[in-house]
Length: 439
Figure 1: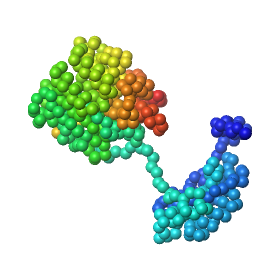
Figure 2 (figure 1 turned 135 degrees about the vertical axis):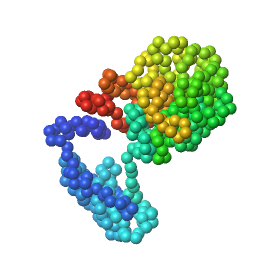
Figure 3 (figure 1 turned 135 degrees about the horizontal axis):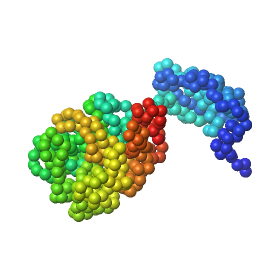
């Protein structure tokens, strides 16, 4: 039995035997049918190749610089017979040697029903394949949201390139924070539950700033002609108010063990898949036990990492196995296990249908929660340890005026999970001016 050489070996032999680069006639590409495909079909007949041929097919001439195969005389005759009998006009033909086919793009007669014609051809024993000419599009995300160009964090994390693969569709994200403006135009349809564990003030719930900001970063609606785009616009939000604002015009808020515990239990009862905890605070046995139980049930927790020398946070309740801790890109974190994400001047939502910039580790945490939702949409069984390792290993190292900064890379992480695809790494403006590239 003859052994087949691997494709890579064949290519090496080709390059090793000639210094002439492989070329493809530009006309072979330019003449491919790009017109409307409504009257075009693709048909093929069986062909036993005659061996290397001078050209790739009858029309157009091309691919001459590489070994190619021509159709057998019988295949040519069969194709011409089919064209004549079905009233077809040849646009281009080419042999597909690996499939032993002679293939053609054909135009159907004016006024003919393409479906009926293809049905007839598919029952013709001479025809190996008959199908419509189909149209495909490149996988890219296009947004009509007017402020998306101002979303610096969105660009840094290459979220747009992640969205063709995942938008976090259906992933349940619990936001344990203040209330949020559930009627904000950019959250419409995203919030599936809103529960107040602080008081019964529904109006204040919707006036709360911090939770609104977090919700916007995670899941602002895409392509609604409104504002911004969330990291995971397909996610479903569970807004659990466990914290109360000190003032209406400020983000600062407070929570306690009781309200947080109730919210954590609610997240478990609601089958949340990921919980955003943009909080800071001391060690708390009850909350730690609840987080451990949630982790045992498969919930992923994303929390704000403590800053260096943060008082009372050395053993904060978020610093435990299973919580993915997040710090602001470019800042120092108390522990070297933290992930980094944009958290400075991030455009997000404000109550009353407004938008503004927000900063802090809370915002960085929301960014990573959104990316985790993207991953969970592709792998529902993803564990916290696997998610953390994946986000750490695919993080981007970006040059800046202040030096190299790290950031979670949404596209790189999602592509790793789906196993295919490509990304366009973010290159900061200052690095382009300096002549350096991001890695």
